[in-house]
Image (cartoon, rainbow, N blue to C red; front, side, top):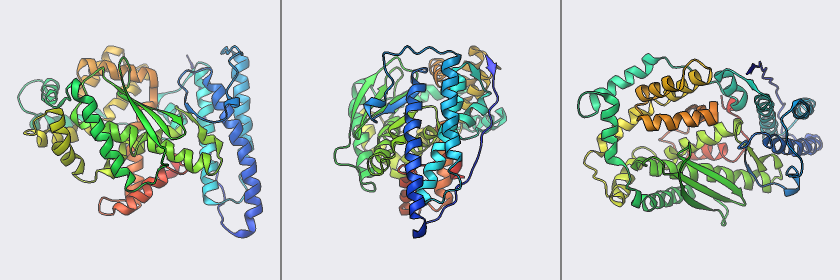
Length: 440
């Protein structure tokens, strides 16, 4: 594969809210709307060459590429896509001296970063490759940190003292966790209770359209654990993968992440506030491998802390979900202490992806690393490797995305003792044009 370098550009937009600039703001909006329409069509066309790139689209049907046109990945197609992307970037550059409202400035930066990721994706489609860290920066507007093995080993040492039994830590951890899997015949009951509670808590703080809704399906043979397929008009299809057992803590985790206040709410608010209320069509298309995904995954992961502050989640699970699943709470407190340490190992998954995708490790070496430093079973490690192969540097969006969101909210006053401010900042992140680099 050809190695390709990529330069990320930056620019600024002057922000002002004075009435004297309303005419210029209106002119800017008109030009931005034209760029936005072309951006949507570009993403849809790019998706024709890479299945799964367009995760959701609910814009005008007439903008969809014609099915009668044969899509062949050749130099002509790549050059055409590149030219269209460069033209749009140049058009945005030409607007950099416009004075704009704050939200227009956010929109400008959002489109610019999204287009840069499209350009990177086109190079990948053409057969180019990037080092893992560079790919993540190009596609997701964020730089993945590196953690040495010693960092993870210190956490493993703590777990070794905490987990019951002696001998192989990976085996002991998984044997202990086996006591907290939801029986297959009770999964739907437990998940329904979890999503009901997450929705109730979310609606106490966020106004959603009265017709927002979702459907849950249980599937198998997937590399992911769960997925939200947003269909537009405030409706989501939430799929839960049952290839591997689902632990009791994952019920709330999945309900919050995929539903409330996670992906479902994220997409509903963007559709309502930006597509329908402002007619900003760029938000009617969702390119999966782009900066918006880091914010979507980051807010979806952090959202559980917003609706279940402190020990609320643990207490709800012990009081409501454990009995529904028929599980014993006797060792629940120890279980949650172990889970807290296991979460701190999450960046080991990024290290595995980086070394595997950069060609430094074989499949077997990567699986062995995941077993050692994430304490996965061999089956679960193989499932994670399949995810890495399919989604590549997308893996950073979960832990790094959550950390970026957490840092932004909590350093701006959204701490656990200020829930009003936390909700205010969280709602801003899921209902306005945002970029990962813009949260620093």
